[in-house]
Image 1: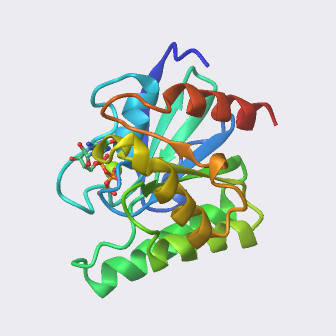
Image 2: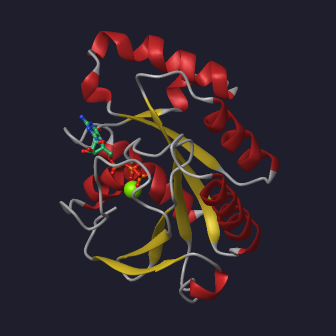
Length: 195
Ligand code: GTP
Ligand code: MG
């Protein structure tokens, strides 16, 4: 994939706010602060198109980014942030349910996990939810720069086990810091878009 153009389209909290259906969509799901927005920025090679930050729970809305005037990334609000209120958690559930059940052009979800940690209960639930819905899900283990290369295999096989992925080699190892995994993710996205 060659990224010729990448632009922010809109933020939305419900279906009324979604942009019109124009081409396939790939959503990013993952724990708060795991690095979803950073993954997008590195993928499109733009420093700060998707807003990133140190404060977990920064992205509380669905953010739509249009790539090459053809397809879109949707940066979903993160889950699993302990300090948010029950009300925010309930809202998050409604936002996700509405998006996953009603968005016709959703082609696949990139589930982002932290390579350093065994997937949380929320990670496992999200993964199972997507599979049960028949939504293709691609797992990306990010922040790989934070552990040594020799540790990757061990961590990836633990992640695969927790998510019931048959072969850990299917997981893309990624770093928004170094650009590791960007070519592999470009290829995977190309394949998703061609399906
Ligand atoms: P929410 O929007 O709150 O759900 O977070 P997010 O998943 O979008 O995370 P974000 O991209 O904002 O990144 C959170 C923090 O992790 C930032 O301080 C990033 O700089 C850092 N970060 C993200 N990816 C990487 C990575 O691959 N390596 C390293 N070292 N830091 C990263
Ligand atoms: Mg974000």
